[in-house]
Length: 198
Ligand SMILES: C[S@@+](CC[C@H](N)C(=O)[O-])C[C@H]1O[C@@H](n2cnc3c(N)ncnc32)[C@H](O)[C@@H]1O
Image (cartoon, rainbow, N blue to C red; front, side):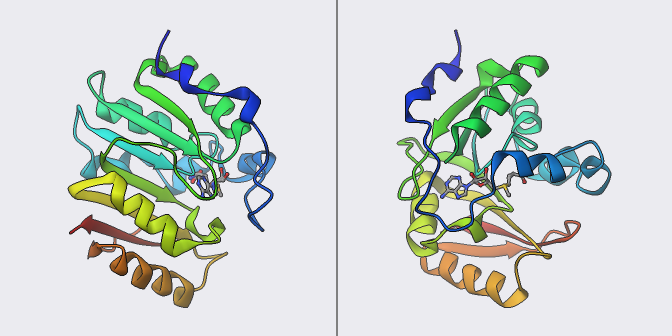
């Protein structure tokens, strides 16, 4: 019996309030073995994660980054995977079991208005998901409030979907939410920024 027991299957309703949330079946087009060649999750995440940390993977889909994060935080750390769609959380659960890291992962069914967690985290990953959020100012205030002081947010958006202008607008919103840019890591096919909680 691990952290997985936080799932509430009866709440598994699709998020109709959001106009363009990635459906679960579309995840298989970008979450596959070929992606690892272009976006290696360990190489992307390793510089920012320490063993024993609590990290938040917001909008994890079926867990492309969640399982590597669970390995990086080790058995004294924890990954909270928070998604709007129960099907995504179910996919992570199966993957985590196969990788033997399910005790380190807490699944959280979020709503468009709230991530739904009370605790604060050392690191948050928002990979290819913020463009799906309809109310970015309140979302980024929520993310910022979940970060510890000096906590990090790795924010990454897909170039094929999001313009540079839209990415910069989101960065300006993040600045108002108390997050400062400290780097722009190079990630294939993406705009990215590493931000720190002020
Ligand atoms: C394109 S997928 C990206 C999945 C994963 N981060 C990856 O890179 O493989 C976007 C995910 O974000 C989730 N999502 C969108 N808005 C969200 C929100 N406000 N809170 C939590 N999850 C959200 C969607 O349900 C979907 O699973």
